[in-house]
Length: 503
Image (tube, rainbow, N blue to C red):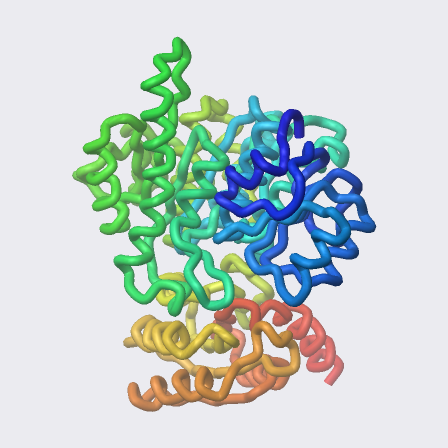
């Protein structure tokens, strides 16, 4: 950290410096990974944490909540402590610093939205890697690193070259559209993190309800996601004021099948300082739509780009993610043949409409909010020749509101379908952060009863899956729906199958 002091850092994170003005060295990191000179970022820290940090020789600590005798001990050991009103200020600065220090010349893509972020980001990552770019992404199967509410991505960027023996040439960063801490909304999260990354391309997949409690209406979700568009628009305005010879072109790519993204695009068009593109199935989109889905395939500027039979998956949400990835890679001037190869050979992340078995067909999907649940059911129904068996895991410790809405989506998605519902709390396989509360279970079962849908409930996941496998016929389809509560399902199904095969 050249020419950075604790005083400068305090101003950047809008914090109060307790201690001396000292030069800052090292990287932004966690307490347990800190080495001499590093800056530790923690939501809270007590006197024990201060003592550990002092012994590690860190430059300073940034926190939102110093507890117990943290301030007193920091003074005694002469370790600068910066208290910020919002820890996201610190994480945004850490991310910006890491990008500028270790990947300043890289291509940068941000993907945000309610559904499809991980698949879209992962697909773009695969294409860029195939094109020869040494590429970083924070996307993984469980979406563990997309929250950006701690310095994990800043740490990964800083360590990338040491691990890969090459500098970052491109990065695809998934940004959560809504984020919170201790049940409180981290307002403007998407805006701050997008601004910190300063992307060449911003992809927004859709706007839907999720994170109920942090946001309580679709309008609030819209505002949070729109912040990412405002971020790149603001950066473009800054560039224009500087009157550089080589002004950075920034692109925003929107899904024109989403009415709220159409509205978002029309609003941002008025600012006239970013390049706006869209993709979808609408014939006369009010936004410029250069990628269009037609019955025989995906078109680019009215020319067939990929035939439908060349695509590895054809569910609605996968096709929307595919169009977004194609659009993003085209504006980055990636060779069309490389894009086509990347799409045709693409293998999905785990739990993204993943086929776990056949006879009966078993589909596993991370559907965890209303839009995702309805879309997944519709896609599975098209593949089902018999009865659609739904194994539905309740979202533990997420509140009654989202579970009520998810169950209503289940009801709506199953309308007119021959189905069999199994509900589980996955009690034996989830941790404390995902334990289903009585009120959450009650709202799910009450909603099913009110809509006169028959169901089987079992507290544990294993017997629920066993029941489904023993009951379903070869012509039926078993659809596993849920977030963390369904994560262990694949391994459990393999175990159950071995037992059933022996018998």
